[in-house]
Image (cartoon, rainbow, N blue to C red; front, side, top):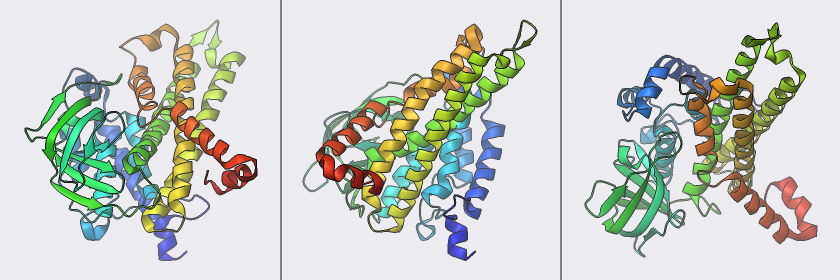
Length: 373
């Protein structure tokens, strides 16, 4: 195997050396640090600042940034274990957003500030817009992830990218949160200035933050889905009724199989989208059009699986799964939250459906097989 193939991973899905190294590193870190006590403290209103410093010390926020720009130079596939681990361990950090923001800034040739960094797609969830020169921002952005914890925001308006200091007086913040108590704030920009502006070189990806935000949410959803499957299977094998584990009951086996199957489908859809994202950032021709299709499919699969898995897991656990004392809610509250962020499965299914209708009977099959609807 040549060096390039060894770093990027084989076509058969074999992890690259870098991907394996990242996976081992982040697994050790989160398995030790993301404890029940940490998550309970987070729910009580305490930020996980010490955990953030650890991920910074491990170079995770810059994983998608080229080495000559101060990052790790990982592809999206290489860095995917980080996103998966955020979901599996329910790490309460703006790490996924910072990774995307840093990758976009570096791709536009802009300096990447010290994180954490949040993301805003102009025209989505509000009416925020950049002026013609890209110097000033006006309008409102709602459900901005981790805005209170971030000094910087990456704002995308078409191919234009702006780095914005959120601590300037021309920006006001109203606090909000999702079901998992993660910050989802409303920001009002009143002729606020941008710190720097740049131009993205991602052809045909007209809403980069919206699309890449959906991709990382799909990745973290798969991680949380696998955590829920593990919890449900473990509980079904441990809980005994009428002299045998409830997991021996055929109806529960059917439910667990459906949940595992939906999770597997979501995992595969996400892997396809990650490979397309890797190709796009490497400049492979036509990958942007493929990426838009793949992200839509991944978010649909992950969102539908999240709805099913949360329902099945709570049915398997019964009453105890709805209590605060059990750890299941840490994962299921994130499933309920993340499935709707950066576009719900219904939103992305509509995107695919409208594209299929526009392609017509003659273009449908070609577009489907080319993943270019």
